[in-house]
Image 1 (cartoon, rainbow, N blue to C red):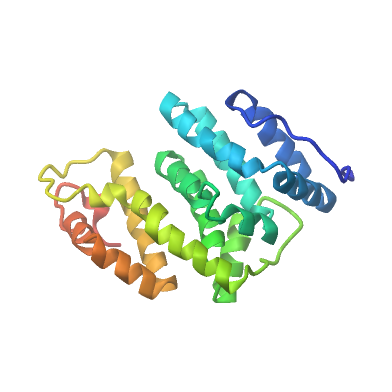
Image 2 (image 1 turned 60 degrees about the vertical axis):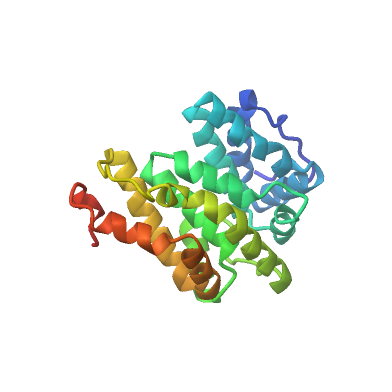
Length: 241
């Protein structure tokens, strides 16, 4: 079924998240629907209106709302409209990577967490093309249609990476950084799972962004914190695989 070229989404509000999620899911079924959704998101600054809802849902400890926001943000990114990505990384715009990191840290479902991480990779990895396309294909698996990842301009990509490593990366790896000086290394299963996942994500960033990630790791003593975890006898699940 074709979608109209002009659409209107529900107001960006916590009480409307279920309806927003459903509307986006329906519109993603056709090329016309995706194009119309992308145009609406740009014209209404929908990302700017959605990002504050992440912090609100966290304050309310509403896991249902956070899970819905995960799906909504992932859908927006996987529209993979270059104008949306360029709009989302403007300096005067709330960082979309920050919102994705917030969602990644609170999501307990491993499948959803993996999808958020893949969406984050789509934003951050504009090359080499093969890896970028593979990350996009994994994250975009449930949506038909677009199969190629449009490349952002080099200047915009560099701005996004600079903002990520200056702001969002500190938030993402804060649980690791908080281990400094800690002697009690007993963790819940969920905490151990999160640390394992953070180590895997860190490895990805080191492979893809060697120089930026090297500076970040050295500046924040990340290697020492990883070694602290991997040498922890209390948590065998954190041992190297």
